[in-house]
Image (cartoon, one colour):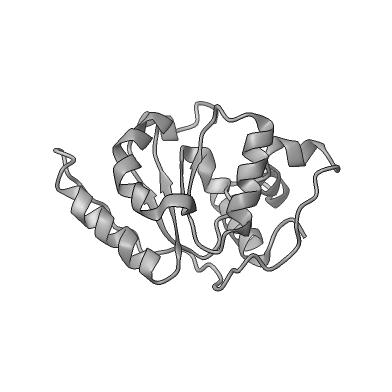
Length: 171
């Protein structure tokens, strides 16, 4: 199967929350190469997933106008979740924000995936498959990263949650 139970539940929750069909949410969560072609082989397996999602999760807001005091809290929260064997999804309004996070994320080396809109279709599909196969990862990207098949999700960080780039211009 292309989707595991955990991803199906996540897309069901997203479709209910955003008022779209479950099929639309599932289609959007696939890279365009997988949506268009039946030639791509998707490995089967349980993907090392351990826990089911439960929504809604606890929400914490950090207000720090200087953007300096928030880093120790963010770093400790990521480390706490990582040490439990869980994954982290980091959403940013612009991919250029990765420069701010790069040094901190170096500690997690190969387990960090940056979902960059400039990736070519083949690269995006390879990355999607790598995320799907990874039992623990840190996925970093703009709002479309919410569709990544992140396993064992323990934390979603949304940087600059009031930024206009998170808002859709269509209604």
